[in-house]
Image 1 (cartoon, rainbow, N blue to C red):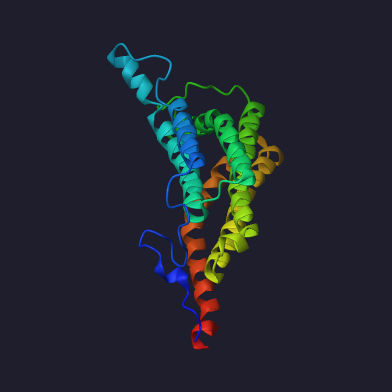
Image 2 (image 1 turned 90 degrees about the vertical axis):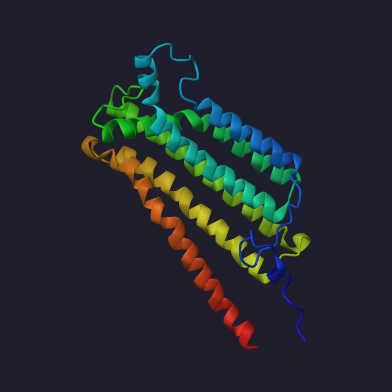
Length: 247
């Protein structure tokens, strides 16, 4: 009789067919949480001074949409690292080095992140949500897109590298076949997402001036990407399991 697949005994909060190995928060995860919290604080509204009157308050609140969007992006990467840490519980040198690089990029990434969202909301609002950072030329806009795209691609690539490290440790971690499948899926998924940043940088310098904003708005394609990929990966996983079930 075949041994039962232990991946079916995970808690309800764990993704299907994957066991959590990080049962307790590691020092690496605690440090990462603190670093992301500090990065979020760097984005805070009116971090340099508190509004002293009503007009100053309204002016400070103009940055709220850009702050909220930037905060959401930071939380996306924080959750990605938390999910990886909970799944594999690795704290060896490669895991620490990759996490340190991720935090380094996050600290550099926060200001271009808010600047780009600020410019986007200013354009969408017709100037009513004026950004405190003003771009003087298309060349500067291309430069911001390049910094943002490079940072975005680097962060996605580092998440993919963390999953690749877990894949290389699959024997030591005793990953089941299902866990190995989802680990490979995460590697390819994050690698593909990283390509969005590189494509944006390429378009920023190849498109004519009037079409340069398309290099920024192409990130909107990522909104349907995640749920679509989840569906495709789960369907592929079920198909791969059918021969085993029949046997």
